[in-house]
Image 1 (spheres, rainbow, N blue to C red):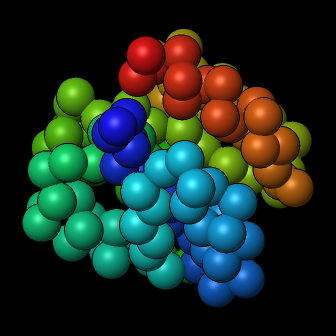
Image 2: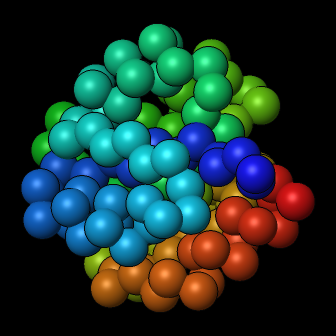
Length: 122
């Protein structure tokens, strides 16, 4: 039996969390968090998470700020950003500095996310 990759999705909108989990739960062990703070708590308590995908626009801190903090503490995790907006200079810089592996646009494309994860874990 193939072991499923553990993945964390962080988004401040419940509907987005539910849609993501529904679409990816067959292939991945999906954990979700409604905030960057909740995402950090999950990462602190779950060493099995290999992939983190975060929404960009969130109330307390944005997705890249969350990823910077999380990557400092968990450098072996692969991070991605998901945004409903066009790519920004901040996202270009994060890609350039290898803070994130890739950015995805909402509405998300299952195949694009799936193949990006596959390329990292297989």
